Image (cartoon, rainbow, N blue to C red; front, side, top):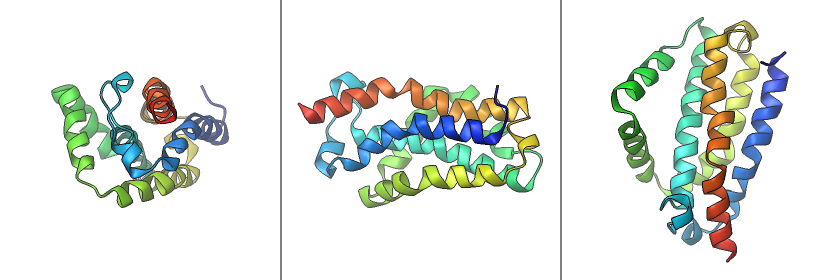
Amino acid sequence: MYLDALEFLEEERDAWAPFEALAGLTDDQLERPVDGAHGWSGRDLIAHMLAWQGIALEIARELAVNETSPTIARVDAEWDAKGDVFNDEIQAEWAALPMETLRERLATQPGELRGYLTVVPETRWVKHADHLKTFHDETIAHYEEHVPELEAILAAVAA
């Protein structure tokens, strides 16, 4: 799928860029639920995106020093057992975070993930089909899946 890490990292960066617009919203704007986003607020979307991106970061940290990632197996098992209930649990956990913490993670976590991926040997992720699929699913594919919610939230703020 990707010839090298740089190709993946560039695509991931481009796919994440639209979500950076959420940082420009006020706290009040981020707290407002939006019908066109399934009732999610900007805060909900940030939390959801960062939670799954954070899983990718945890995996990258593990693969930087090990051949395998226990997080992949744990998260896959939780998802298989709970499905969307797992998402609800993540959402509840992140809802408890102060807005300042959420904003800080929005500003720093994407770069931290990219930084870790630059030190993970390519044989452990870009050249490893299962690991690459996990990174792709938790980042690029997941970002694309939630562009409609992002667009709805930004449109509601602009209206």
